[in-house]
Image 1 (cartoon, rainbow, N blue to C red):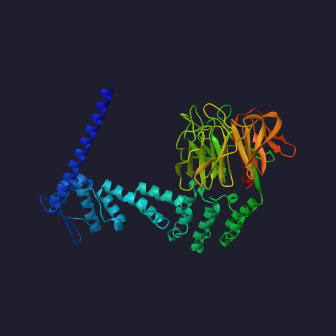
Image 2 (image 1 turned 180 degrees about the vertical axis):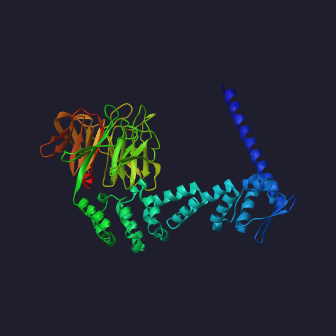
Image 3 (image 1 turned 90 degrees about the vertical axis):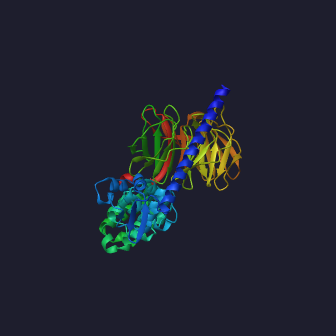
Length: 541
């Protein structure tokens, strides 16, 4: 067996050596062909562009460029002419293109990259087009992204177009301050506002950018502002910001939208969102706090068991879960539009994990992977849509509790592959390391947790007590209920603790130390997770 392995290694070495020789041969051939061109040896055509004359070889040009192949191989006068005129092209760009054909390299092209990309597209030099496109994508900024977008549309360059559009969405707050933004058409701006990925920016910032655009040409744009305002939900805008924008009061339709903003600000309400695990009835429901209104929402695109659920602004995030095995699938749900969309997938498969949001980043913590419990942590920047691994937790754990409190992540309890955990640890992104905290005493497996002020609460899936951590005292206290209860999830609504079980939604009365039933389900459910969120009553707008 060892002899066979050695033979395989030797075979790979010989293949690598052969590949190296082939590369050296190709490079040497290009060098020699370029020397022939420089010395005008064996050349049979002269390209003329304005005052520029370039001696070259027909077969080399035709081999590299379908444009030249058609010219020299078809029934065109140029096929037999020794001199060929090239019109409507920058001479320098033609020279750079021919240099690239003969060398595979490109120098001193930065200041004319757009014209060179046009030349490459005209001559159908795909590798040169790719090189120019890659450079332009790397140079995108708030001042040029709109111009690059227009250029890409004219050139049908979908790679550059996608990059420019993504940059505009990701850096919208900076783009609206550019001069190019003020010259956008109604249709262009409408398409940007309709992009659901714009949710990563505050609606106040989007509104201010939109009104800046309208105020640039108030005579023609005041009347068409209202249709664009429809892309911004009134419940997501701060009333004081809206009041400070005079242009919103200059048309009846805009005034109507402003009225909805002010009405929404006066009618902020808490809602409870509950997500059912895959099984009896995989769905997502919303309850108001009077529990006289329940709305069936769009179910997850692909329901799964042990999904993580968290929320930010008017967006719910569902990550991972199990559909027979752990998955990387992630989705986000726009509450006001009642739509699910795909989110950047997890970097690794997870289920029975936790997701929390801190400083505009979505953290996925621990859970079960295909190899068992993990201590890994990954972070998705919701603005840049870039995901990276962060420092590992001190312990592998799944089915644990996790909260954000005082800009710090706290993780507690859960299980490894072999035992339950009482341990607690915290992570401060500013420090970049996990720190061990005082352990819990009673609560361990299948934890759920919530934070109110300087206190963290933690329950296990089935138990007769809850533990409360006082950040100031750095101590856990056990709160006994003296009766066994089921906790699929605990969460906070208006500084009060709530829980969801298979039977009901309950509220914790700290004065009586009792869980009071707020709403009883008609049927026993298998709720996976739940969350409370304060928002405008969008059903009444």
